[in-house]
Image (tube, rainbow over all chains, first blue to last red; front, side, top):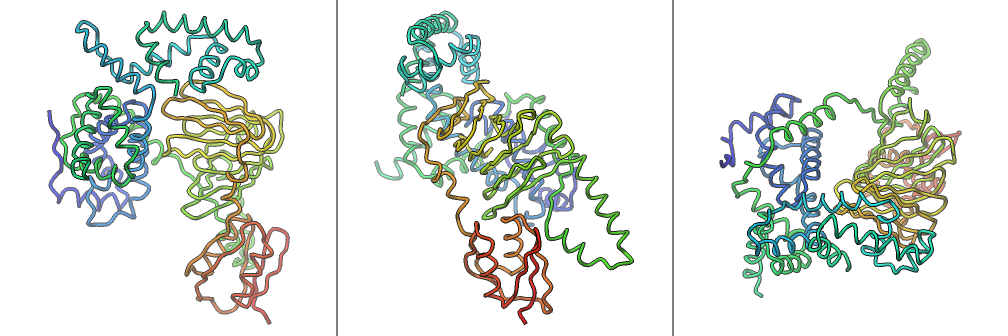
Length: 197
Length: 334
């Protein structure tokens, strides 16, 4: 189902006028008109629903805060863009360069060759990784992060965490085994491949 | 690749990105294009899609949208924030005559009461800086476009809690019994008594903390990872992944350079200049010169030397300044 892009101009002008007069009802009407679209649009760039929710929240709060500065001739759709602009550009740049996103794209690519496996949304993929990582004991979590994301060697990790080098070696191997078991070989290989820069 | 071909390619890849239809090779290509494009180039692409595309909202859950609406309403329609203005406070005190003394004390008493049960918000706009002293004696220098919120009534009850967005240099007073907690977007910081510079803007995709002295515990809210930071270390939080990176031998001078910048004015009214000085040095300025001064001020004023700052004002407007405690009185030069 497609949504209407713009409402008749006269309705919007009236709404903006009422908004400038502190009308909470006008504000809510504007929210009802645009929030879904803005949310869906942000989600296309940022891929994670919690983050998209925050951006939408921020933008509408900001809209209320600057209501007196809105000009009579302004229209809502372009105005909302101006307020969302920086969020969207930053989200785009981050997500495009995110190693976890790259792992996800590769994972989906491998899967698509096998028709029987279920297609995952990025958010689910990301959450699986996060949740599995959090299932590990704290020390193992730290060791995996330091080793694979900060690319420290065992000796550096040992000194950072105040452990013996042997302990680090052991804990790292146990952690990798657990990840492999929980995530499956393919996912784990992809995470680690792309997390090492 | 010519400009036209390149932007068509980018549009094509961008659409595939948004609809989760990229192949690994296409992702690499898109990454390359995005990383070598300016913000304006990316913006015009995004703007075009927003203004022209039919945005598919069929997957959006009504409950999510309503949840957001409720949060927005509670933020803007119920909480009252009180912006504390130094000048209005002094103007009120200065203009009340003796018979009205009782009324004024009642007014001040009521203002105090209102502050206690509500949030205290201090914020700076673009180009502005300010200093704040919290009830526990901690001093925070705020850079431009920053906001700090706390509840005076509950401030030191169990913990010293503040909300923060922006950039600031924190000099937190030592209090082992009451940990100082900073809540910002995506992170939480806990200290007992330290000096550090924190750059944590909600709209940005990363946050940074550089520790000068003391001990800081930095938690990434996304991963629940908690890291201890030692002096001269810098912690960088990637908000997308929630991962904290530590860098040793960080350059503190560079990170706090914003604090030592001069205040720059261009054709600003004297009233505005005085207000900026008040905010930056955390003092009160009372003016008692006869005729109102309309000459605008253009120039720079030191931000870390009050005497020099006042000298500039004195010389520019033929005024005399007298310092009494935390107040400055400006009078005509006789």
